[in-house]
Image (cartoon, rainbow, N blue to C red; front, side, top):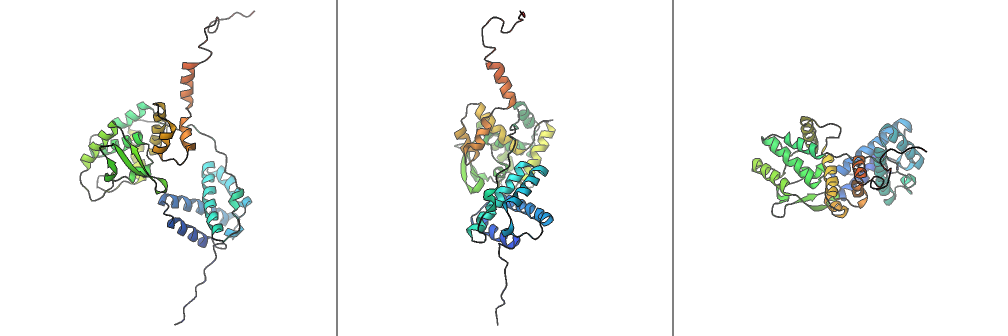
Length: 317
């Protein structure tokens, strides 16, 4: 019986073949589902743009100018940060295609990232955190949500890291959590006495369940990161919190800023947050505009001068 030969399109000429080859390599590198999803959605958006504006363009025919046109459009229609995510995704794809010999050059080498406006990092105030915690009741959900909030606040975890926690990841003696972060990198993050009390109250109510996941719903199923996001938004609404984004990541920001305000250093903060470099960690060291106003009122060089007429009325001569 003769074998039937199946002709496969080259990744240089076919987007489906290019992405299949790329994602096969990503999976072989054991990249996280979040990273794979991140790449998939950005590449999908780029292909949709090509289908409308330059139909029939193959991967090998993409140029730096074509990418720049899309990035400029995406920065305007969506956001500069989204456009930069697309650049990162396309660069990863074309690095793979060049490495495999499907294309000669990577058009992204000539594409610069979009300049993004540095925004003040949103954080909760102490009063807001207390209000959210007080909004949690004493039933199972309330005790669980209080433990979630305290863990986010005291450890600065990403929401995916929180939902990935297992009971066995808690070291009660050393008061640490074993975290599986981005790139499947493990790190140990400590937690304080208040967080320990919240976690112990929750695990005591949680009891024995078939799942090893730490945080579960009322039916014993593991919480997803989307569900945790809704939980945080709901508790903030109950507490009457306005003027700040009510998300798990805002608690991560709050942890970082409060840690530095309380005397922590950026190097230990970097390790706890799981940052690969200090660039993002240093952003937390930048004081918000409110901090600057308060500090200036306290340490104003002009107001500290003990000179005549510095603060009173002066006659024009």
